Length: 115
Image (tube, rainbow, N blue to C red):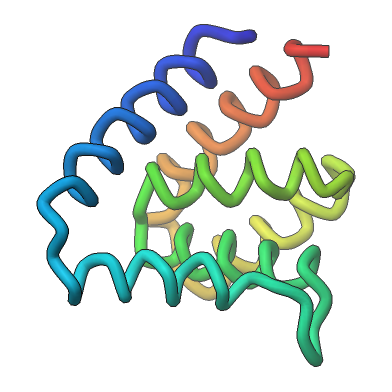
């Protein structure tokens, strides 16, 4: 697995475990809501992941972008689909999103290199 992918996943897992071990009801409910929001509903999970990716890019959250890229990749979304969603994010978010777009491309390439 690519270093940037494995480093991201290891850190995310370690810190999520630490956060959830505090047993704070509000934080646990937010984590649960976040997980359940992306389940199949009126929108399929692939569409929801792309929506999450676009929102994350516009909000300039690199960790969120990585999470949604990896989930999109695992769901079988193509690079063309992801890039099209990122193009909308860049249009909506403006040029300030471009540094995040660069890192998104780098992370997607790392995901593809895992195979």
